[in-house]
Length: 219
Image 1 (cartoon, rainbow, N blue to C red):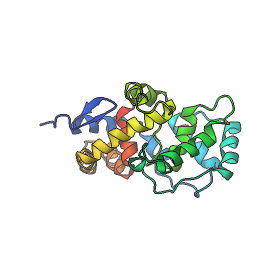
Image 2: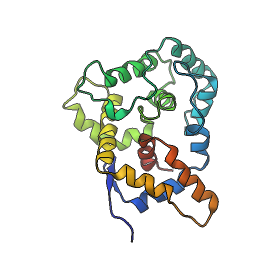
Image 3: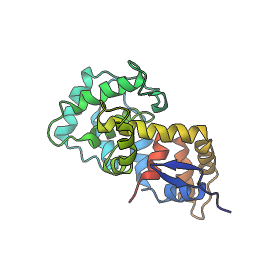
Image 4: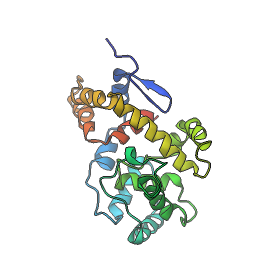
């Protein structure tokens, strides 16, 4: 029997069976080409990393890639093991502020054509447990939640408000045990096609944040 809704992502409830269908339908090449290869050295952005972002439709040009590579040399980098769950927006001078400083280091001086989505995709690749893949799809999905947070945090920008909203979902999924149950279901996933079964089981390698992102994804 299918398990009923066990957690909520972007105001949508998911049961384990429904979530597994999402993962099975996710573009098969994306995790292998974007998520699984090792990150480059801390404190740098490489051309190979820029190339990898194109597998999540970043559309970053060679010239735009040069911008990221150059700006990376003096960026205020955060620890590689940072986690969005620890980014309390009320805690001044800690991870949330550090995330903001890093994000705006790239976004504030970005030339025309480099939007929040391109910055988010590059930073997610470097910090897959911290920065949501904040593209137009995720932006729309979290619009209402961001609006609700803006009343409490009127000083924050829209990107930051969405980080808070995504963090809320992440904390709830962990505290309820939903992420743990999802990971167990992924590891045990069965399919009549061995390639599909292996691909879905392999997604246990993704961060909790990335798992939630895939649930919001729409083809």
